Image 1 (cartoon, rainbow, N blue to C red):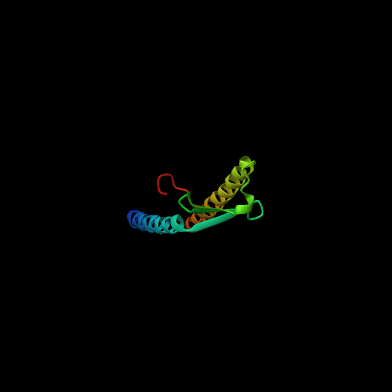
Image 2 (image 1 turned 90 degrees about the vertical axis):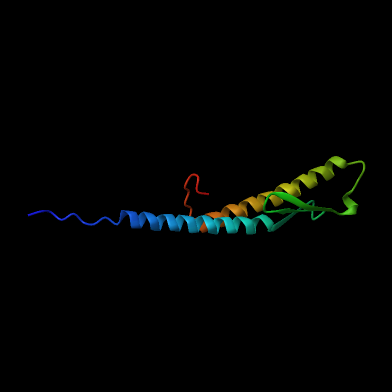
Length: 113
C-alpha cells in the first residue's frame, strides 16, 4: 500500500501572497502621494510665527506677525521660525509614519516599502 502525499498548494499560496504584497505596495504608493501634498501647520511664540510644510518635507510658507520683527533681536525671530518649522515637520513625519503603519498593519518587509 502506497502512502498518499497531500497535494501542496504552495505555488497557489505563493501567488496569492505576491498579489497581496503588490496590492499593499500600490496602496502605500497612493497614500504616500496623498501625504506628500498634505499641509501641516505649526506656530511658535504665541502664534507670532506660523510655518506650513508639505508632507514631502518642504516648507510651503512662513508667516511672521509684524509686531515680532525687532531689528535689535533678529536671533529671537530666527528661533521662533526654526521652532515653528521643526514642529510642522515633526507633525508631517509623525502623520506619515502613523498612516503607513496603519495601512501595512505594522508589517516590515525590507525592500518592499
